[in-house]
Image (cartoon, rainbow, N blue to C red; front, top):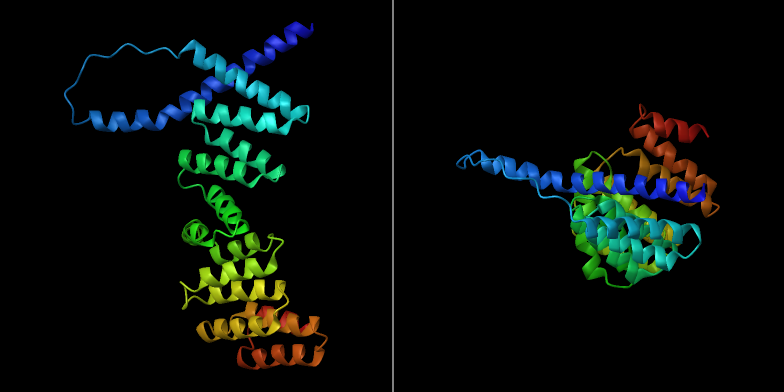
Length: 270
């Protein structure tokens, strides 16, 4: 019974891997099809079968990685998923390897896996974020900035706030001063973006630097008057500093200028 179960699992994984390999080849097939429109028509070539040794190695790597993970041998699981990613050119396998390495807190392996992941999926914002965060953690800010900028650009194109996403990402760094410095240097390239100044303010609050936070929030409001988020954050900072009168005054002044702002009215009512 056990043998039947194991054989079934191997066959199942082999089938899934075959699908993954074929899917990985699909983009190249589409490109070849497009190129053929202008080419002279040729007789259909015989299909080249998948190499059995490669398929077997793929099955082994994924199965070994899965079993290693279940047994708690995460270093081995990482190695096997990286091998599977290299063989199959699967970004999903590289992503899984990067997650395992992150759990192991091995920065170099995280970078190795995430860079392969990005190589296989060049527009993946999650891979860019992981690479950028690890490089910041290693004090390699110059190398991190291009990845973080790409995340901002990509998220903004999707209609999301890329600056806020980077602020959230950097806030996970245990070195709050380093995180703030990284955000400041990143935001320096976007001096006319209110959201960039707001993101710096968030990390300034995180690093307990209230004066810097107030300065960045004021700058954000000059660029985008009436924006409720900076006003609410200023009020929150005063509350944290045990200055409730100033917290209320900030909201009251903003409401006088923008009485129809529902967010400010709700914050003031609280």
